[in-house]
Image (cartoon, rainbow, N blue to C red; front, top):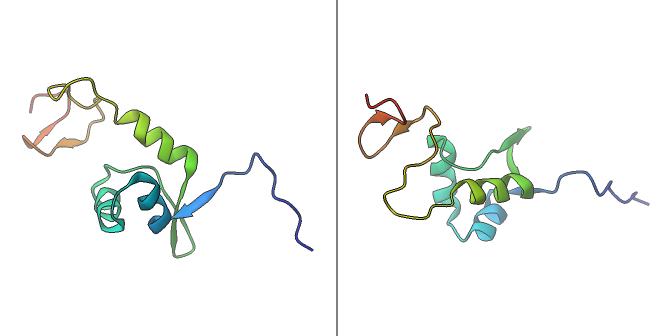
Amino acid sequence: MQNDPDPAWPRFVRTEEAARLLDLSPRTLEKHRCGGTGPVYRKLGGRVVYTIADLRAWIEGSARQSTSEMAKASGKPDRAFGETAGTGR
């Protein structure tokens, strides 16, 4: 008989379920992963998995109040202007 998992243990979901929870296509989530713009993920063996907590954190980090609001400075390139966020280069 299998023991019940520790409730503090994170719940992992694969790309397909994560995409469904986020209302995105799996391909869009894969593109975010390749570009470094998506939620934090883990590779367990050959499997890509996400925790529900990391999906929620990514949603919260995506909150904006206006279309002109810039993303939080992360040092990642700004795709629209080819600049690094916050440096003006």
